[in-house]
Amino acid sequence: MSKQKPYPEYRRKLGPGWWLSNSHFTQYMIREWTSFFVAVFSLIYIYELSLFATGQKGSALALMKNPGIITFNIVALAFTLYHAFTWFYLIGKVQPIKMGKTKSKPWQALMLNIVLLVILSYTVIWILVLRSG
Amino acid sequence: MPRVARLHAILWGVFSMGGFIAAFLLPVLIYLVGIAYPLGLWPMANTDPTSAILNHHHLGTLFLFVTVAGSLYHGIFRFQSTLTELGLARAKRALEAIGYLIIIVGILAVAYYLLRLNPSVLSLP
Image (cartoon, rainbow over all chains, first blue to last red; front, side, top):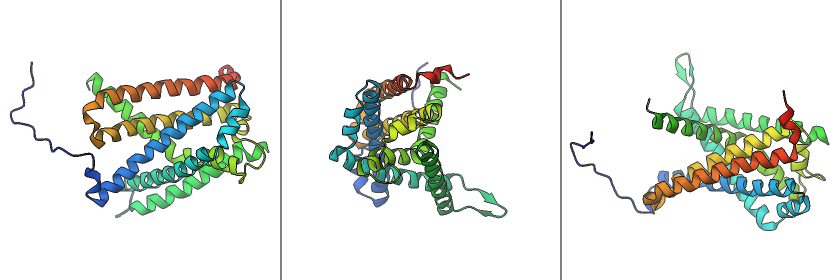
């Protein structure tokens, strides 16, 4: 059975630069571009793991010390934190917690999750790095 | 629920999980591997972080797998969706195919290399 629509569908055509017309759209697009850094860092690290696994540890460590890679990693960390903070804020907006007659605010979810991020990051460092030192 | 819709829901669920992983676990990995070690910052003064993490065998291996695989899935899934919003909507199917190919090959590669680095993880009860 064919699905014929009873009315013509209108789709607004957007050019590639639609996200520059409004600051909210620009923020949205910056947030979406954080995924590029998340993906590329993951791929670079998989390549480093492949060097470790194939006995080329020296090459892997040299790659980590490459100035271009270090610069990329600093930018990637900034974008990943931007992704994290906006994600935390969105959680507070989408799923506010009811406390009696009041609801939690998005900035409260942001602050709580930043504290959780710091605790979790320190726990990872403590368990996986400091205890082995 | 139709099978395609169910699959779609599962893929978006995994994507959401990857978002949490990228938000909570990826920053510390980028800092340790990509910044602290090459610049000699705390806590990576003398040792490389990948070896230090893998010294913890199962826990370190699990941390690396979850963080890298989850972040890769989330990053690629969202990036191919971003490209369709930037004027490549006509290539949506091709972008999805390339994206899923990178995700599958990437996750299999992480699993394979971590197993080579820590084969004893398979002997877990």
